Structure formats: structure tokens, C-alpha cells
Image (tube, rainbow, N blue to C red; front, side):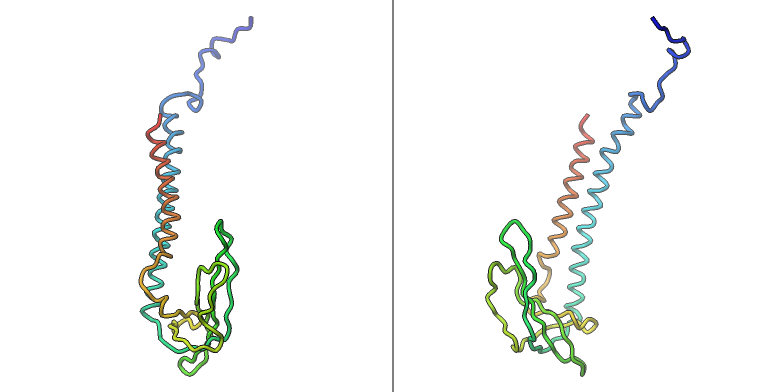
Amino acid sequence: MLRLPIAVRQKELPVIWSLSESYWWRKRRGYVLWPLLIGIALCAFGLWSALAYEHNQAVFRAHAVRTTAVIDSIYTSAPSQDYDAPTFAEYALVRFVTLGSRARARVLVASDCRGVCVPTYRIGQTLTVYYDPDNLRYAKLKSQLRGPSATSLTALLAFGSLGLVLIGAAVVNMHTA
């Protein structure tokens, strides 16, 4: 039988390979901190994106100028690839006169259409739009100028719920042995 020298038999294993509590805690801490930090970051990003969207819409409403425009053409967006029936939006390219110059803008006239959109507008029709004097290509109908919308909640719910799941995972990891 082969016997190891006494110096080798009595040598302790390095700390990294030991099962001491301090190493376990250092390793375990990563299972708690990373999901916690990522979860908090996702919640913060969702909140920031919702607030930024609402701020941009409020600035547009504050600076919007009312004018009369004529529809040059109407087109639809590509259908969305979703689990339900595909949806699409309908846009109108309008022209209007502002401060002595002609401008063109794209206006959303119908959204979330499934199958066929009932034509509410036609080419050559005159309608009232609101535009931003700093960005003449961006215009909206009066019906789109309302206050806070559910669109801002989409990012908040998507990123916030994913963040809460990761925070919950961190809490579960912290309390399990």
C-alpha cells in the first residue's frame, strides 16, 4: 500500500475548495444579488419609458398648432405578427400650409384593424390636424390628443412584471437553504 508523506496528508485544502460557510455565502450571494439588481433595473426602465412617453405627448399637446389639411394618399402598415389575428394601422399622408410654406405629414387615422378597416377618410378630404411647429412631419388628429393613454402602460407592465419576477426569484433564493 502506498502511503503519502505526513506533510502531504496534513496539508489543508485551499479555501476555495472548502465547504466553509464564508465561501458558501459568497457563492450564494450571486444567486440573490444578480436577479435582484436586474429586476430593479427592469422595473426602473419600465417606469422611465412610461414617464418619457407621457412627457413627450404632453409637450406635443402644449405646442400643437391646429390647421386644416388635405389627404393626399392613404396606406396601411404591414400586419403585425401576433398569436391572434394580424392587426394593422391605416395612415394618411396630408398636406397643409404653415407660415407661408407647404408641409406634409403622416397621420394615424385608424389603428388595430383586423381584416378590413372601414374607410372613414378618403383621398382629397379636408380634415383638422394638430402639428408640432418644430417637426412638421409629425401630426395628429384631435381624437389622438387626449391625456395619458394605455400605450405608456405597455412598457411599464412589460418591463415591470419581468422585473418583479426577477425580484421574486431573488427573494426566494435568499430564503431557501
